[in-house]
Length: 141
Image (cartoon, rainbow, N blue to C red; front, top):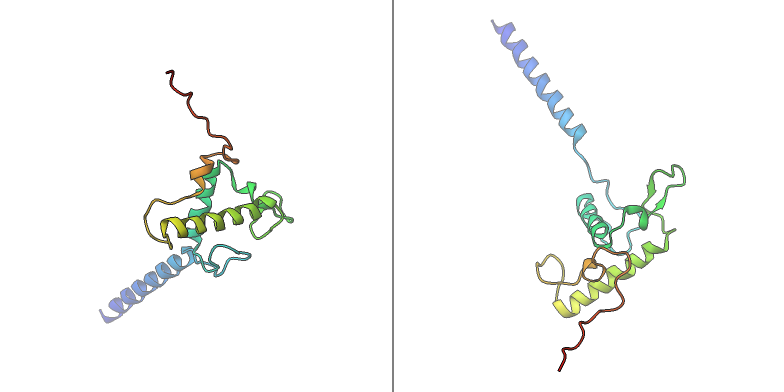
């Protein structure tokens, strides 16, 4: 009887170990600091970085390859650290600009849910924001 319980205990412990190893292997780990981040925090989480990038996709109506150059080793992949494309430098300037506007006029220091200027405010889903505002004609008098 004692042998049978010992075997059940060992089998249960073995299954728990396999389960823990399986969970640990499938858990996505943040790989630490991202290379070449100049405006965003270097220790930003993968999820937060992805959220910001998806915001750019929607706000400008573009895909990742608009700012990110193809990888030299595999053109089907992107080299996210590369500064080869000028659009990436422009994006950095725009991020700094909106941060200054938000800090000065909306007192937004991050994390607060207040009305603020974002990419979509001007771009409205277009790569280049409209440069002219079309006003309705004046009323007839």
